[in-house]
Image 1 (cartoon, rainbow, N blue to C red):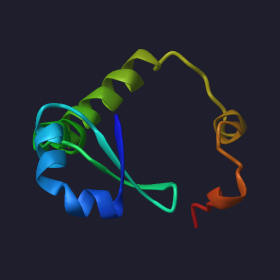
Image 2 (tube, one colour):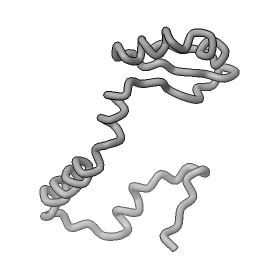
Image 3 (cartoon, helix red, strand yellow):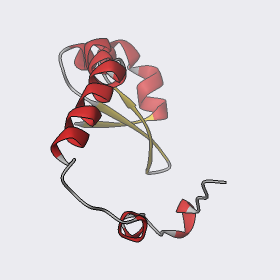
Image 4 (cartoon, rainbow, N blue to C red):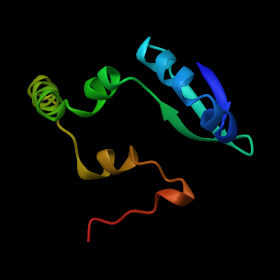
Length: 90
């Protein structure tokens, strides 16, 4: 995966787009921090236009797990408790 600064990406955008079309993922950074990733349209479609497939996958997983007896406390224990992950169902 190629890493490019924003300035480099601006100056070499056609080259980076050709690389993305060829299947390379292009990371773009600002001040050393990753801020974006350039991917091909085909890859984008694979990741983001699969809502129906995602739903089907979830339903299949649920069917396989139908024999499990899970209590709310057990499911709650799986939650990420990182400070930036504050969450409430309310």
